[in-house]
Image (cartoon, rainbow, N blue to C red; front, side):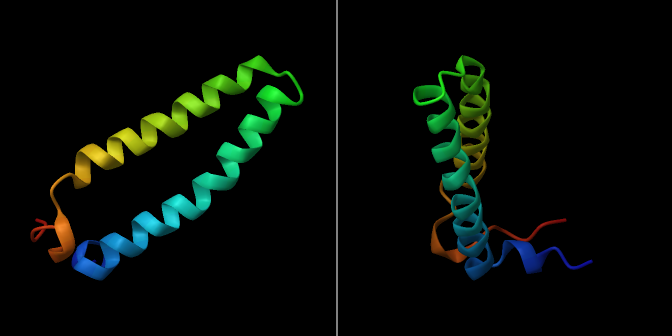
Length: 72
């Protein structure tokens, strides 16, 4: 498997956009559960989403438009 298919300049941007598209509906649904339905346990889901984006930010910090360096 060639790792460059996930780490090229256009692939990094595409993968982050896909992650954003997938997490936005989840966050909206979790906020609906918390504020409209009154289900307080949904805060755990929000914490998981925040943790996911925190890890993504940490991993791709300083990547820029050139993509990731070559992977082993």
